[in-house]
Every structure is written in structure tokens, then in C-alpha cells.
Image (cartoon, rainbow, N blue to C red; front, top):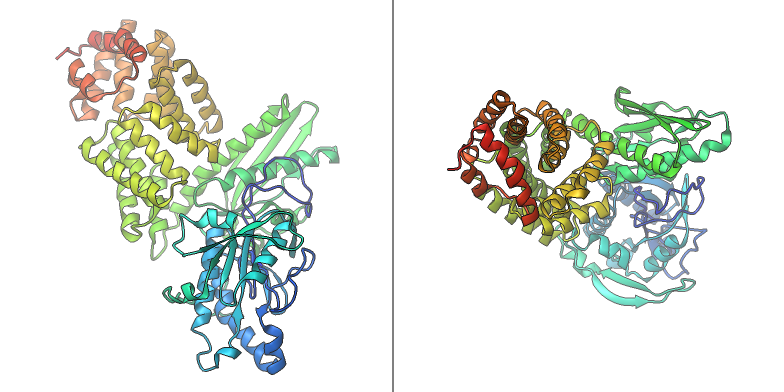
Length: 639
């Protein structure tokens, strides 16, 4: 049976290793007659295994063994060595347990697991052509998503039971999945699963809706490439952006405070799993290292990850100190470290704030680290990672051109990539929103088309919805954009970008009183964010429009220091300085804004009104009374 090693608990309650966890869609369990994702295999003609006896077997294995015991055993070992094991490695799987004629493995995602299952079944069709059909070894595979009890070398639970029933129902050479698995892959994989309606299984309380990929449908798929079996000494290549969060050490005098350290570990694992393209080892696997002194490089090899996060918690009275450090598992180099000292107060709020801050900081550090490892033969994901790293630079014409070029290259290598489509659309809309586009109309037309393609292919993609929010905001449709940013926040409540953009949409929609608290939340979550100048700038704009000119100048000057290449930062400072009576400073800032914008928008009030969006009537009135009034004093003509 195969189980992807990527999980997300529904709560931050402490669960010791081996105890049942509650999941929100992260354990993918299946049944298969050779190792398969979430797959449990079982002998043909026998009852499916119980949750305490998961097995992976070959369909009709007893019959084949009776006919030719030694030959069947050798052929099965060859299939495992030459097809099954390489496919598991290719899809970043990890074998948890061997069961003689099968195994249990973990995968980083349900998509990897299902794709691996399909490619294995397709590969089996072309094997043993010299043998008659009745002697062919054929696998049955069932895949489910559900609650499990995870131990170091085994997996149990109701999710496993359903997987076993699915495997028993499957045809030799076919794949049966439950509805929850189908919902996860329906927009991501092109396989023609057939709806078999609801099925009732022994010892399963409720009917399960079943979907089948028939052997005939698998046979029509193109033959999958099968990597040659590498020598035993060859190490598996760790996925990019792969990480394990080791159990945080409790340094408090009270051993009963271990629950607090474990809660930090669990929450960080959850938050990191929400970062795009991250492969995060499950909490249960990570906790097998608790209390052990293990070399970081060894952990990287054993779990096939590139990065390790470790840390400690020290609690004394009403004070707590949390330390964390990110380590490159290949070189043992320390890439990042941070320490947080807090009054406990509301323990849950404090824990959530710190784990969210660490997760956001790690998102930045990991992208930068991956971009610094250019491969010899870059693929689409390499260019996407490099584009994301370019996005960590301050917004400017050059930085936008760099990230757009990299995302374009990724899209040329993989034209169907929703990730590349969404990120390119986001960059194009961002260039327009920052007044840095030479042809805003062309950028927006391309961005809108890309978002449409991405959402058609993956309607539930949070990244595609975020990109659509950016496009809508650039089109002056702030209220519609709020829903799109909300979709991203429902997936990742700690997305600093989505929080900041939501704040700005609230501003344009007239809810100006909600803006600064949201922006302050974004700053708290990522105080060293590369794009933090935008938060400063937006807070300054709110202060300016509400006639708090002194406060506006403080925030706008911070924004300008953070990114002197943004023309808007200079324009709003020009207005604020003029309202304050600082004519010389106002003139200098207006000149800088005109030089940086290039499109002439700051040549006159009429020109600025023609290209800008100033929100609902209530907000437009505030712009007239403050921003435009200040620009007139700074020397901007009406026409």
C-alpha cells in the first residue's frame, strides 16, 4: 500500500507518535498487488486484509506459485527491481515496509501516487511478452485517502481498510480509487476514470463511491519510460524544496512542557506544506527521530530531503524562547537561523504567530537557496523557482523583466503548466499595477488569457485564483478580486501576499478602516519580507488620505528606502511633502516619479486620472481632498 508523506492535521492538538491523527485530506492510502501509492495488495480469491494486517500481493499469486514457485518468485523480484522500485523513486516515493510479494510506500502527493500507479500498470503490459497470458503477473491497485495510524514501519486504520476493499474489487491490471482521491486528481491528471457509483464493503460503515481505471484504458495510454535500475550504491535524488521539520527540543525544566514543543513542530509542518511546490515529510515520520542524535546528512539520505529544520523551545514562567535553524542536508551548512522571545499571554495566538512567521521566512529562504543551485539541464520547475527568486528582488523594470522572462521560458518547456501560467500572469499584472509596463494593455491581455487557461485546467488552484485577483485589481475591479484572494487565504491563511492584496481591495472598495490592521498583520507575519515596502507604502497612503500627513511621511519614507525604484512611492511623498509645506522636497520627489514612470502619468492631474483607479466615490473624494491637492501644490498642472 502506498501513502504519500504529506499531511495536514485539522487541529494543533498534541498526538504522540503512533496515535490516530485527524486529517484534512493528506494521507493517500491504496491497495495494490505490488507496492503502489496508498496501495494494499492482496491475494486473488482471499478476503481483503484487515487494518491490522495490510498486505500488497499479486493477483492470482497463489495459483502462479502452485504452477511454478521458483520461476514466479524470480519474475516478481524482477518486476519489483526493474519497474516498481524505479517508478517509486522517480515519483519521490519512499518504501516503508516490504511484505514479501509487496510493500508499503510513501509519496509526497496524491498526484505522484496515482501517476506512479498508472505508469506501473502501463509498464506491466509490455513485460513478459514471451509468456502466455495466463502466466502473466498482474497487479490490482486500490487507492484511498483517509485517517491512519502511522508507525515507523507500518500504517494502519480505516483508510487502509477502504484501500484493501478497493484493491479486492479492482480488476487485475486496473486501478480503483475512492471519490476523495478522484477529487484530488480530476483537474490534474488526464486519466479516464469510470464512475462505478457507491459500493458497500464489509466492515465499512458507509458506502464508498468508487472510480475505476480499466486495464483497457491503461493499455491505450502511451508507454511510460522506465528508468533502468540503478546500482545499489546510487542515492535517490531528493526533490527540490523538500524538507523535514524535526521535533523541537524541549529545554524547559518541566518535561510536561513537551506538548508545547511538539505543537510548534506540528504547526510548522502544516504551514510549510501549504507553500507551493514544497515536499514536506509527515509529522509521524519526523517524530521517529525524537530524542535521537542523528547526523543531518544521514537524515537527508534516509528521508530523501534537501533541507532540515530543527529548533528548541525554552519556557520559564510567563516567558518563552523559540529558536529555529534551517540546514542544508547535503552540505550540513546552516542557511538561516532566528530566535523569538515572547510573553506567553494567549498561548495559542503566540504559537500561531511564531510558526507562521517561521514558515513565511523559510518560504523566502528556500526559494533563494534552490535558485542558487542551477542544474545542468534545467526544466520548467527550475525556471519557475528562478522566477520566484527574482520576485524576491524589489519591484523595478529590470526585476519584472527578469521574472517574466524566466516564467516565459518555463511555459515554453511545459505549455500546460498551471504554475507557470499563473505566475506569469501574476508578474504581468504586477508590472501594470506598479506602473512599470511599457504596454499595460498588452500585458493585461496576456495575463487575462493565461489566468483563463490556468483556471480551466485547475479550477481549484489557489495560485491561479490569486493571479486572477491581481488581474481584476489591475482592471479596477477590486470588489471582485476580494473573492479570489479569499480563495488563496482559505488554502493558506498565512499568505502575506494575499493578506496585503486583500487589504488594498478593501481600501478601494471603501472599507478604509480595515486596511491598516490587515497590513500590520502582513508585516507581523513577514517582518523581513522582500516586498515589505509595499505594505509601508499602503499604510502611508491611508494616513495621507485621512489627513494624517506626518504619519504618512514616516511610512512613505520607509517605503522609498525599501524600494527607491517605485515611482508611486515618490509621487505620494511629493504630495505629502507639499501638504506639509516642504516645497523643495515635494518638487524633487515629483521629478523622480516622472523619471521612473516613463508613461507620462505624472505630467498632469488629468493624465494621472486617466490611467489610475481611485476606488468607489467615497475613496475618490479622499484622493481629491488630499493626494491631488498635494500634487497641485508640488507643481503638477491640471492638463
